[in-house]
Length: 338
Figure 1: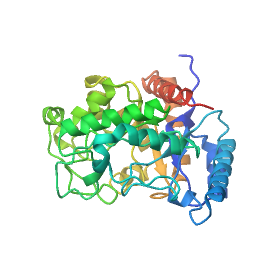
Figure 2: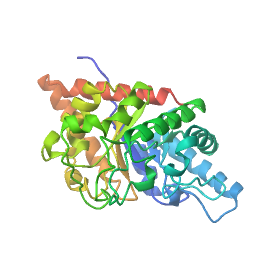
Figure 3: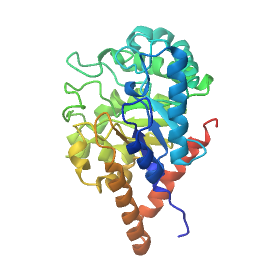
């Protein structure tokens, strides 16, 4: 098998919470050469006038890209409105998704234009979660509605708005976070649904967005014991390959939710979990300074390289899996404007 593997393409790294590139990030980005970075509130010099914070952000992004050394990189941002808003006041702070569900396309178009003006090219939205559990502490009004029909209608409109402005979007959190009663930032939720029950409700918005051509889907750190035993969705071949790829026909990039979140972090105390995630179906592993020591990425990178070398020697399928996964990420990068 003749192939060139680029393990950095499997990583999306959330920067340290500063408006200037830190020595930690400079070294990490140069060593790992990830597919891209994720921004958080701390990366914006929020107390400065608009011209100043824009200049500082542009410098941060240039230094990050120079360190990575790729012609194109993903610059990702969670940007939904409501509680999920990282940018300074001069970028429109829309209400939560529930409040603009009936004008989602127009809102997405404005979001895309504003974020493109500051260098963001990958919005980690729309939420395709159905707000079916009033006790849910993390989704709530981030969802477009309490039923599959309203969520699907608004999520497709939102995707249309992003695409009309040339912005890449990401449907989340697969296979559905709306019915949980635990915040996966702090603990691991569990839902009892079977594959058939997921298909009857939770999967419907994702299915529609996949048919509409959504380029990326983000995983949920949730246990579905009836489908995947004791593996969270992010590490489950049954969910990511069996349902998302094979059943729903998704051919784009699967992005993990932040691997520093407490729901999933115990698995990633071992670097080899990165191999497990790729084998399950993930393409991009998201690890952010807001939740974790991003230096762990070095160990994950090394684990992927070791596993690939062994696979090439033994003729196992992992090498082909890595190659196919990296090809999907490369295609996503090629969609970006330089």
